[in-house]
Image (tube, rainbow, N blue to C red):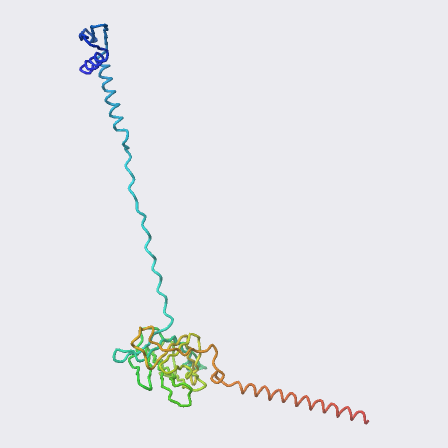
Length: 336
């Protein structure tokens, strides 16, 4: 009801003038209240408002709701999405490459005195025992067989190696096997450049309980290669203060019943430069050739050439003898 009175007062102010008298009379008959406004002055106007109380409350509620809706309109009932920072995948670690050779370098007084990186295997021949029955008899035979042995890249011992001023020895041992490589400095004045070379290579094998050599006839097998033209191990050599490097697979025959196969070799048995980084300790490398030189490439080619020439000469002699004999026979027929 108070809102209606305020509304009527506003109308009176709007329509009033100077020296204007206004009276407001509120009649409250039943069932609907009536408000009468009288304005006296130069002009008179009576405003009668008949409205039910429910209508007033309805309008008031509508205005209140409209105001509430208007004030709430800018806000959203939907919760804002949280910002998601994309996570990068962790880098996949690269697999560690498998080693292609073993490092068997030797130290003396906490300093390297012999550098050796090798990938070596051995193809050896041996005899094993076999028994056969012939009727009621048991006969024992020695059967020739072969085995391939690779020198492991790790889990080996080199504590028996020795370093000297003029002679050094690399000894690599593992279960059932001992590999030895001997070096010496070259002091021959006839040599164009002094240096060092391998003088001997050997492999000792214990066959007892060794799965590579079942029923071996001998409990201990030894294979050696001396530094001669047949075995060619003297080709493993370097200049003074230098090293030897070869990444080409090469075969070095033992004196008998075996072969050493070298797939990688980097050697320096003397004058190691310990003041440098580990990978830079090797001196200037004497690199191997793709093919061995004629003077050291196993058996000489002179023998097969000589045999070929002899056979060619024999064929020529037979051909000449045949031609001469044929001519003589033709002359004999002419005389008759």
